[in-house]
Length: 192
Image (cartoon, rainbow, N blue to C red; front, top):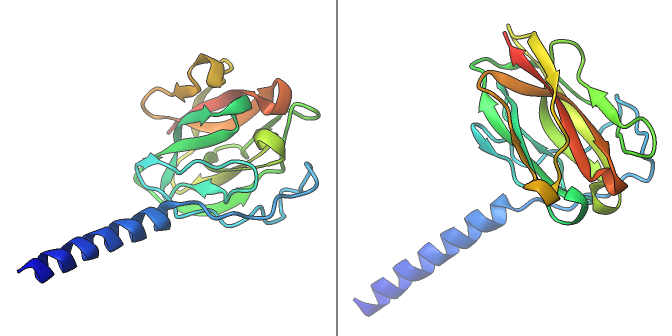
């Protein structure tokens, strides 16, 4: 009886350790150039997320992404200069027909990127100290396009680090200001 209980406990601990290890982002080599072209491979995203928060990403960590048919409807950052970032993936009830990465942006040069017209943000990647250079994964979702679009105000870890968009609105672009892209604002559009 005691051996069976011990084996059950060891099995449970092993399963829990496997689940925790499987959820951690893997390290990737960071890019040396902040102006990677849009058609270059940014990296392989960690496991795609459906209806929930992605893991955090930061400089040197794997990009994060939503599963097909999902787009980001909220953003959160934490840490110095807003350097640990993640997005909330929400289902649009469809599927992706194409996916691509934008070139990196930062406050030192062109400080923003938008997805092609009608496409939505489905992933995040960054390089450089404190997540200084940001790239957006954009996807075309079958049967969806932009309705009304707006720019949000800037957020950072100093003012809570989180922004949520109204129901039916999803991120379609982003811009930053401040050292290491510390302050983030988002172009968000209604999906119609």
